[in-house]
Image (cartoon, rainbow over all chains, first blue to last red; front, side):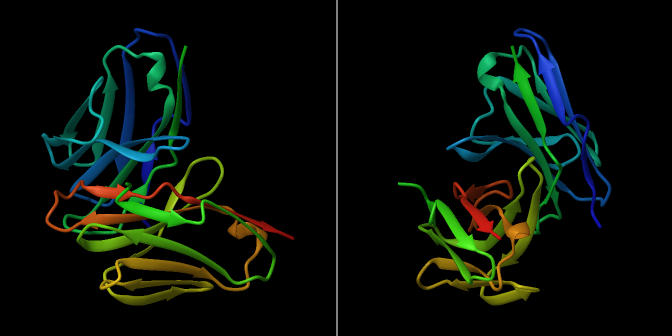
Length: 112
Length: 111
């Protein structure tokens, strides 16, 4: 089975801190995604990557950046965390095309 | 108007009941996904379909491309089916990252 691993299940950070969320998948998937999920708003795409060093902005990229230096790892970076970035962050991966999505277990980030 | 609408938003059922969750969409799609999210966050992909019907255990997903509608059925429901069920579509011609999500249906199955 495909495994998508997110580095932290819960994270508490202070306003202004730089935050790194890591995601690793073990099935050689080309596509990797970062979503945030908020009550009443559903899942929203922040960034996705379709290959190493390739990325595209999603619906809500402001305040975030990403890095994909290796195929299996996709990092989400909050350059200067703010309280409105408190959310559940979910990483996912899939094969190129219209493949089935595999999700990590999520990181609940609280910014105080 | 949301491009992917789910109904109902919330659903409470008794164990053993037959359950239907509906998803309507307004864009051209290349695939439709049904996802399950248990309390605690993890999301599991249940089905990906572009036509017809798929079955896995007690779960059945159908799609009608002409009517732009999909249904997820659960037969002989059980408390462990309690979760949020999310419909998502891959927008035809869109970029690979362009999945459009519904807001989810929260299902609670009482023993």
